[in-house]
Amino acid sequence: MLRAGDEAVLRNVEPGVFDDPIDDASARAFLADPRHHVAVAIDDGIVVGFVSSVHYIHPDKKAPELWINEVAVAPSRRRGGIGRALLDATLENARTLGCTEAWVLTDRPNKAAMTLYNHGGGAEYTGDVVMFEFRL
Image: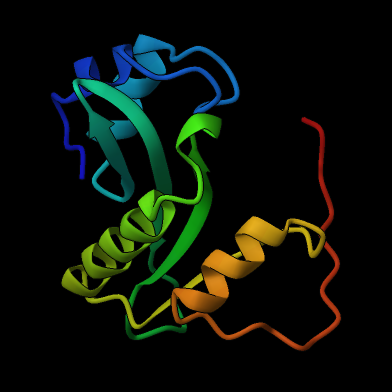
């Protein structure tokens, strides 16, 4: 789990892990916020995978919850257990924060994500969920 001051770790990332190049100011701001979390897998000084998440509180909830924003592993490192180890580390971190629930969204055709979340102990939501995007 990266913390404030660990921004330099994100300067050496294997291609295909993040969607875009790391912006130092954004990385610094993300890690400085105590509700933002990122677990990374590092091999020989290179980030080869990550999970980013946010824990939040709400006026009608007694305990915080964790929203898992993104999970990614370098294409050359997939199917080796990295995603599962990162998910496990993220969920353990959530427990230490007092979170009682975590959730993540994915597209049903994303077989790798569906397998990861099922094998990671997640229960597939059976409701009819629709996501809306707002371009701001």
